[in-house]
Length: 167
Image 1 (spheres, rainbow, N blue to C red):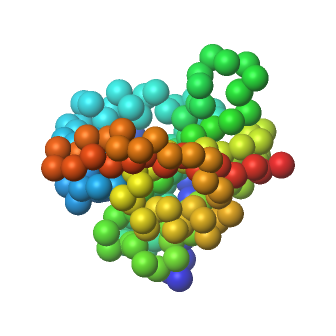
Image 2 (image 1 turned 135 degrees about the vertical axis):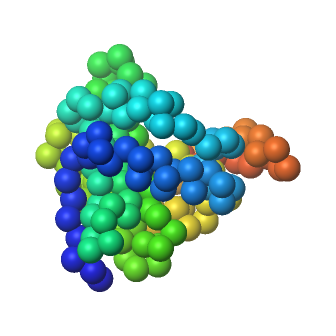
């Protein structure tokens, strides 16, 4: 595995994060977004993830930023769920299949524990078998499935809910 560094994302990382995410959208079947974003749209997302514990973290190798993960509140504003976070993660095509996804997920768990989170939740399209396998390998369990809830244009797809207890 190449040498990797994790750090908080900075605004200068935004074009690369946008590129990685838009590539995932264009591949189809990996995210519920159907159209690529522009920089201003992603800037609003980035600004919404500038406060702890819901920050964006980048994964850097010798090739620069090749992936990122971030947390979102689960059912924001509900005090009983304040220690639950949704985790999202993305890798550039060239970084896949090298163990970086598994490492990034472990790093996300470490960060979440440090922020006092008790649970991580992941929401993914049922068609995203690579992400499902990664989460299962990382000890996430299936909580449920919303069958055929996502309209991908050419087909309907289920959305899978997975979780992991951190404490």
